Length: 182
Image (cartoon, rainbow, N blue to C red; front, side, top):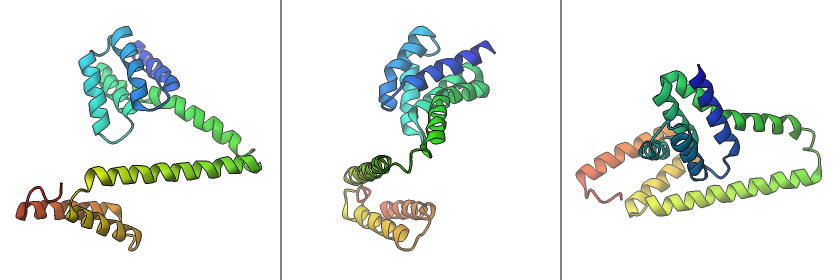
């Protein structure tokens, strides 16, 4: 039980003090997990971090889950993951409990309007960056455009669109130039 509590505390501390995303927390993970606790080697931490970047979800949570699982199996994964998530949950609950008291204030409404605009710009930037990196051929652009229209206009579920694009890509590359969609 002692190691489970330690897992929770260490990841709670990392979750509380890490701002700026996954890369910003890497030095703290290295210091706590490799140097202080010796729960992982440098190589293992880099492997966990790399896998965490390749899998769905937040890198910090994935890394915490891997370390906890390595040390204490499924229950270790639960304790370390909850330790990483708990600070964010507490902060969000505190903010949510007070936000209703301030929503009627004019400058708070302006702040939220600005945040919405900033988020929309960030999403648009990510979308354009994704297009530039991943949609390089005419056929890929056509497929992307069709998928966008199917989702936007016809409201077809993204699951079906992704499935259809995968099937199309498999057949297209099988019967045509294998580099056509890259």
